[in-house]
Length: 100
Image (cartoon, rainbow, N blue to C red; front, side, top):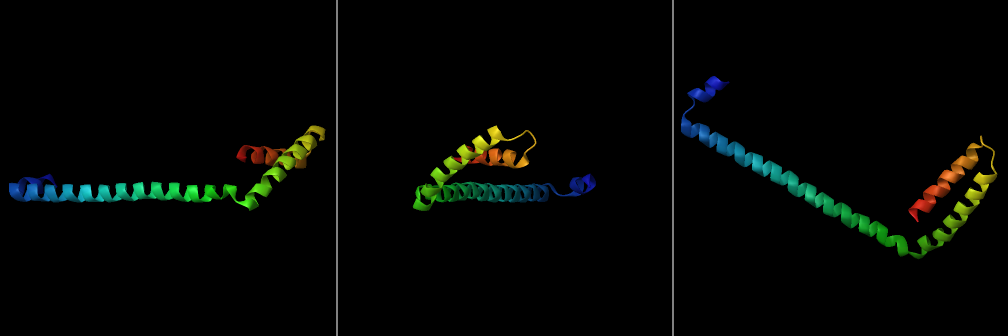
C-alpha cells in the first residue's frame, strides 16, 4: 500500500488528500448539524408534552394521586412483612409522589 503512495505523483497525492479532507469535513458537518437539530426537536417536543400539565384533565388526576399515595402508605404500614400487594402499592405511591 505504501508503495503505491511512493509511486504516485506529488500533485495527485495532494489532490487526493485534499478531496479526502473535504469529504471528512462535509460528513462530520452533516452529522453535527443533524445532531443539533435532533436536540432542538427533542426539547421542543418535551415542552409540548409538558405544556399539557395545566390541562383540566390532568388537574383532576393530581388530588387522586395524593389520595392514592396516602392510602398506600397506610396499607404498607399495616401490612405484614411478606405482603407483595402492599409493597407494590407503596412503590406505586412513591412513584406517583416523585412525579408530582
